[in-house]
Image (cartoon, rainbow, N blue to C red; front, side):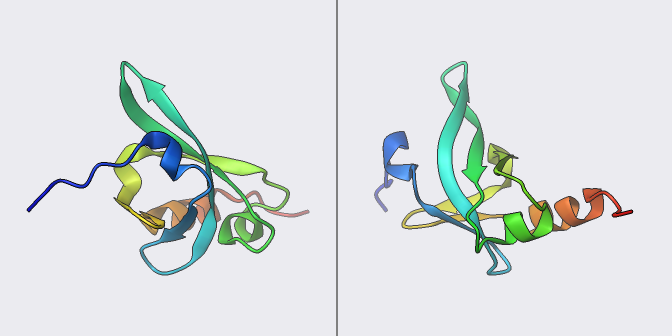
Length: 92
């Protein structure tokens, strides 16, 4: 089986979904340290789960180890959205 390689610039603008099927946002940029991708900045779209969970959020940074697959879309672990719900501040 051949290894399918992707340029990092090809990932910008891809739709990001959780492995549970929720739309999370769009890839904005990669965070690189020591020639390795360590994380991804995800831009929150108005219809995304991210903007619904964290009101007024412009985006989030996701660690690379939470990325499950990259091809035509990004798939991240659904633990990301459940952690965001737990960390949401209480409204007064």
